[in-house]
View 1 (tube, rainbow, N blue to C red):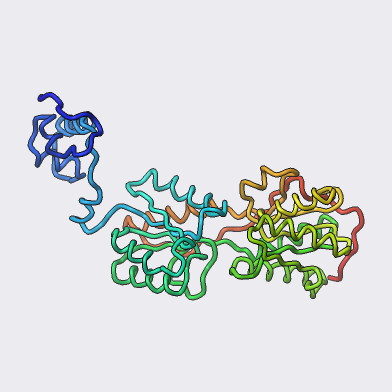
View 2 (cartoon, rainbow, N blue to C red):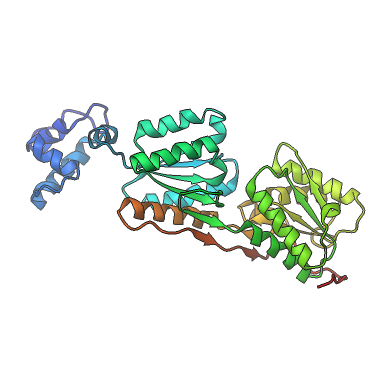
Length: 357
């Protein structure tokens, strides 16, 4: 065997260097390192793999993709990484892909703004094998482009979070409507009849679904009109919105015993704002969030919340996509159920005023 003339991991190491290192033909080395099913003796295969490791050879997946017209790469499209919901979901996707032959590329639609054609061109240029996209990233232009990719290039596409109307892609979805209903009913069962609702602007479908769930629960409990108990903030961040809502709700002097926040970031802002006003949670007022993100366990008191299993959502979406790419029959939509996670920010109300049935 010839002596190695190049240092491990140096750029420029090619399949010819591996062949020279192990003393075999370039053709034989290529068959092994390309994953070809051409029959090669086990001892020969092992010899080549050891030589590749010794030389620091890394396969050029892009070049291979150009030859085969496919690259083992999954595109994950989300609005941003600032929201821990998406961070958790991407973690679920990555944990599955790590055990597969596929890599992952992350695209943030908030960064592209109106230049969605650039995002789509990037996907086409990379010859992506499959796509997982969060519903809040599905604009009409992106949807149309992805639909064309699916129909013309047979690209597998899975949606997550909530079901966009008339969407043809299979998906893994969460029932935000039912989750919000559960939050209100849980507080009512804890003796709370004076409940405030703290939201950010209703510019997303998940927020609209949550408000619809709140209305449905209040109607069932005898409070058809919630407008006087509904508060909205357009602060720059959800946390600042919670801070603002804490002050507004307290100044209303309506004797609320509980607050429903539209997500955990708003709820944590509420906790901070109430603490600034020397209001004890949950002794004087209870707070319930929505999502069960990492903040819910980090704040004090720890946050009672409605769990949205974002990591499981990513995990399932990745499995469905890999099954499709493996030639298995496409799965129908999966709907994940909400669950109340009981922590320290909610306690039973002392006095309970019953609504009508």
